[in-house]
Length: 118
Image 1 (tube, rainbow, N blue to C red):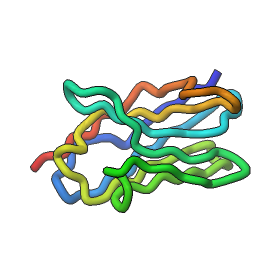
Image 2 (cartoon, helix red, strand yellow):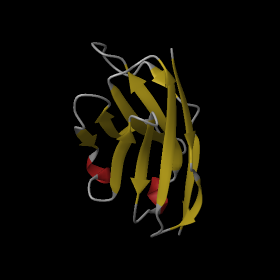
Image 3 (cartoon, one colour):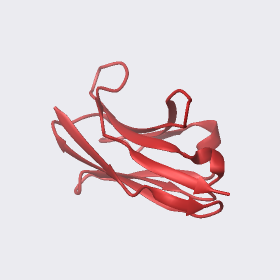
Image 4 (cartoon, rainbow, N blue to C red):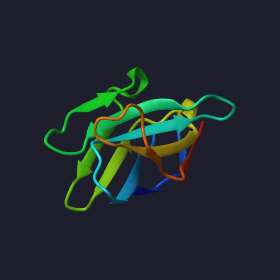
């Protein structure tokens, strides 16, 4: 089992920055991802980072240049730094963990609400 706890969400204004944290515990995993679900929309991929041996990162097109994913293995914590936030970034943000040699993400956090006002 992997336990994931997100924090850092809140209400901000357009153009502001916000950093989300995801504290992980339990068994090891290979990748941490961030997803979001805007109101009345499907959940979508935001960014991902390899957890060990590599720091390779992946971003959705809308996140490139504005969002930065990072991790600290010693703290077993990942972050999603979001800059120049827009109202369309309003969503519940989830972190997720993918186990080695599995397809998809196996464990999910409870989510944290990010609301961007115009």
